[in-house]
Length: 114
Image (cartoon, rainbow, N blue to C red):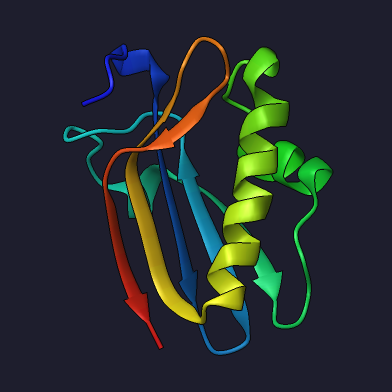
């Protein structure tokens, strides 16, 4: 168990569709996250393209405090590289915790590998 505050929890999901991968991100995570399909920020990545820290910050991290955006965006870019390299079809982390020192810790994950 990692001691943390509720406001340090986020939700992220990467899944593959026919012509693109999609990242869903919500600035609140945990058991009470609710309907993320309805409220998450979404970012589509066409097949064969990569993510950049700048694009992640601009498209899905707008509700995250500025002091956390660089570290969180770097984690998301690395997570997407990992997702592609290991041929995941689905990867969900909830909660994804970012501590006050900007350490990112995935606490629970569900995944499908193709």
